[in-house]
Length: 196
Image (cartoon, rainbow, N blue to C red; front, side, top):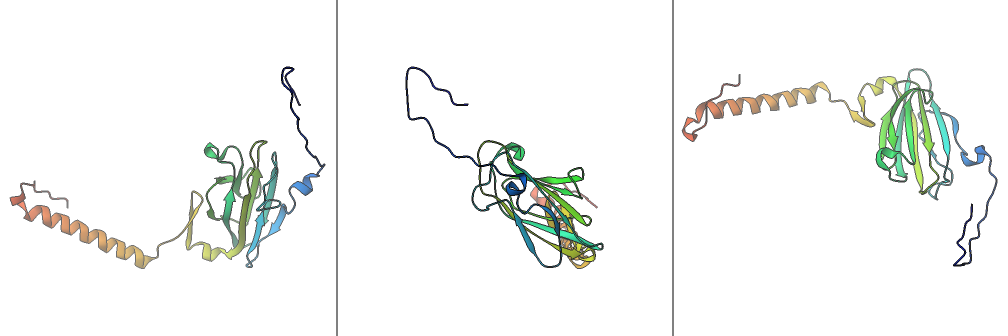
């Protein structure tokens, strides 16, 4: 709707419009197959500005016995609290009814699926527009996934037994040092503690 006041005039505006099908708006979205070769996905015309009022989705599947490693490499969306305006949301499963792994609008992420599918949704509102996102994905054997831990959208390498043993030795040393210090330094006016 265009509206003007009667007391002051101006040049008005000029715009263009084009009819686009949903397939054009979300070109490249839909069903994708993850293999051991890294592939990438992004919103339409990335890194140019995306369109407003969009909802696009990608379903990534892999073979039984594999997991999907998903990396958000570049991301630029409208910065609203809790990513409420424009965002991508990643679900650990085959649909938006699966468990959500979180929403992203500013920070890059590294995720690992718990099974053979990931579902990604990109939503935008009707206000500001930005570049959007670019991500990569590939399949990894489920046995390799055991070396990785996924928590709150971040992928961590699990510590092996050797690392745990080193950490235990360090904590044991600190404990013995503190115990020795407090039991042998009464001249400092400190209480003697037996923390054993």
